[in-house]
Length: 379
Image 1 (cartoon, rainbow, N blue to C red):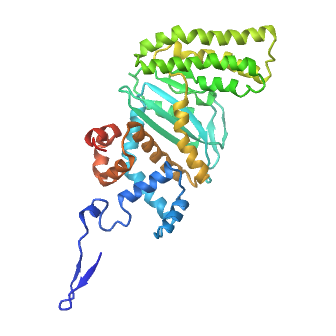
Image 2 (cartoon, rainbow, N blue to C red):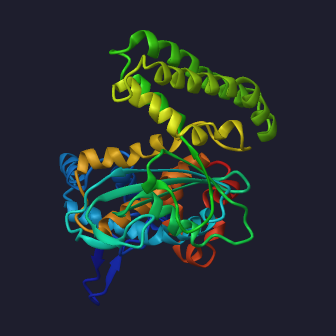
Image 3 (tube, rainbow, N blue to C red):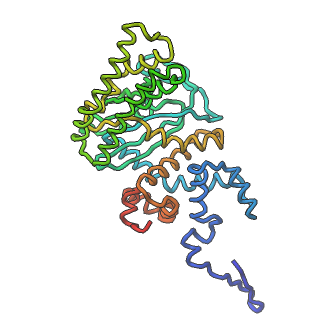
């Protein structure tokens, strides 16, 4: 700020900062809360790497290095972390989980000796994945969490369910059929994604057009039925009854069709179509769970769409340098996604969390996205 010196006594007088500037950070803070919020959102939602943000700012006449952008983003992570920690704890008692993962890369990641899934043996693990979970709480709030490390989605859901209260009923988990996505620590009800089963047929439609077109047409009707239950806002029990009446016959028809082909040897089991049929029959019990268990979803598309946020960052930035950098990204991306699910202005939300960081540490519950929305209805 502009400073003037008295020629008589030598005292300096500094012009005061405007109120709107002080609300965006203290007087010794070079980058305001709003600037930090934008840096975090650009990186972990828009997919703009730190070096690209630096280049854009240079075009605008602002010299800022990529490392400085990272430092400011880390400060955002520190201020919102109490909210993330509370979201993680709340997710442990959820009634339903969407679960999936996608590959990622951490340059400094060292191979780890970890226990193999469903075995007492250990083995050297090197694969880095970002696991994603959408947890639906008892009051129908949606919490989105991500974790990037050497490990699959099954290990991530294990860490969440480890904090689960023993008084809670068995949760429902929607996932694909990979064994690495199945939890081990707690008893759960597993359901499988019908989009994955349908995709098996889509991949071979060019080679078996007549057979596959009919199956895809029939299979697609279960999504039409599910859309109807949403439009009519049917209760979970009414939705289950509707699927039992209209979708279950379709599932049985597809299974019988595949079994008949195998029995008559009209489809080679090792062909593309044979593998698609075998996948459907092998995982039939999990695929039809939405017709037998109340509250089970029809597919896993929701978490796959949410993982696109991570994929967008991975395609642009290519990798994380360290596990710390990956964890910072997980925390910020999780809070962005959860706030977006709650329908609030994420930019204003992040700025408020930084401005009121001391209160956030003491009372993080007041700053959960849905509680924040009720306190700030215009946001």
